[in-house]
Length: 138
Length: 138
Length: 80
Length: 80
Image (tube, rainbow over all chains, first blue to last red; front, side, top):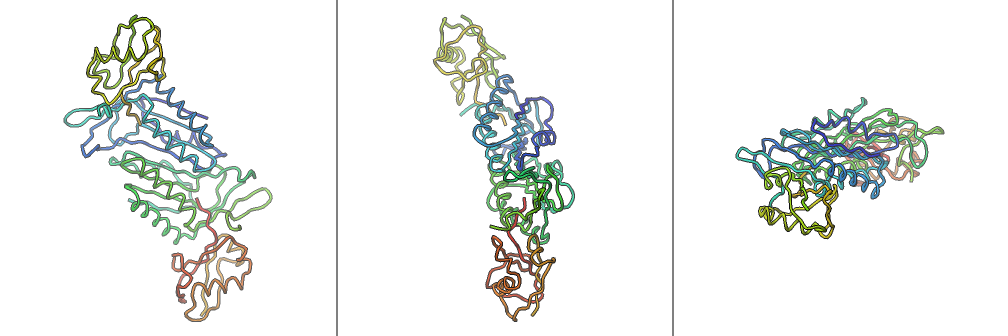
């Protein structure tokens, strides 16, 4: 089972974890991204995430399907938030349930690593002296 | 910061996640063990966990300290439950927060893998036709 | 033919809007569009890279474009 | 000297109780205790393995025991 969502509203960790829990699973790995107060030693005031939503949902769905092809997993959830986020808020939650924990860890890590490379979502960091679209320039 | 607990009461995922969240962290990895309805194809009715509590707490503390030595992590939480657990209940929660996600994943996985080898806690599986102490016999 | 190119992130700043209209020959490819975009918006060359997407899929250079396609410029992504 | 050995998991079934009292010579080592336990409770030899803990730490074979030590038998663990 796959659950994919992009939302402007705060993500709910507990709802995500409840969704992946299943009597057939022994291990759940959950990755929670949070907005950090600094990047490369510079204070971050807030972030903004923008998504090309239709395509991003399609790419997120592909990642979940790849996880099922590569590992013996039972439930995969990927939620990503958009809009303005304050320090400490949660831009992304990935939760994977599997009968055995190794598959849950491997799949969860694969999904977040690959999401950062392929899913059309962009992050803008706001500092006291300006803002920058992350990774845009070499 | 380290938070270690052994308890007979149900573990609270949301409390654990709130505890590890921090404005200095960008990534949180959470492992949640759950009671699976079957083992090696045989239906499991319930589990029972018994701990040598004083020593188990000490060994869990060591694991958390090793995580801090090996990786750049900021918060490590290990909660283990004891007593009788039904299918779907949670015997263990490990949550690790770090500035960067790789450290959180590595440390979380190290802790659960090593916990299963070193921490004096024992699991008894109850089937329709009897029960067994897991791993006791070759 | 004229194609409309959707923009996100820094590309919106470079286009000075959420899309740009580009003139292409019939049977133009994704590579042709890339060349035309870089000509009209030289700041695109300063990006670490950019991809083009056609109908919500990453496109290859020799894919042929059609006027009804949904086309988007994908600057380096940074979600998660 | 007599030492008291705490038992957990399957060791409780083998001891038929949550601890067992074992007679040892003064200056006995952890290895000596292991031998004495296996003699008194032959079913211990059927376990995949077992460790001994002294004062809440895994003990080495040549560690010397003292009567006031908290000693425990640790059958194969299976937490998590």
